[in-house]
Image (cartoon, rainbow, N blue to C red; front, side):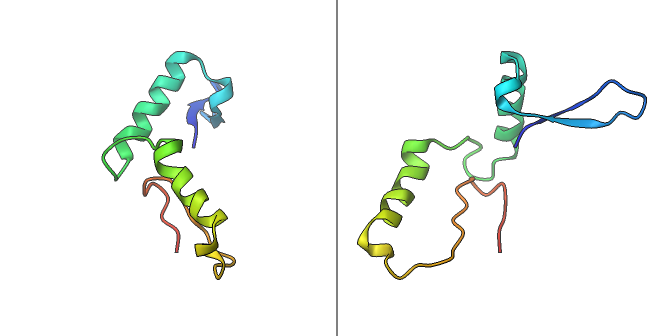
Length: 81
């Protein structure tokens, strides 16, 4: 996800701004926007708590029979079927 901004032209075209090109204020606004739409606890995820356990499972023997699956770790923002 990123922050959408208008390009200032007459068309009002929206441009996706990535985190690496955002100012501190834009990044704070982006995080606030994400937090407002997060279905789980209204918080952004943390790598150690939310992603690493899945990676640890997938790297272990318990996942030996799993193939071709998607594991979205996004707090429910993007629903995948």
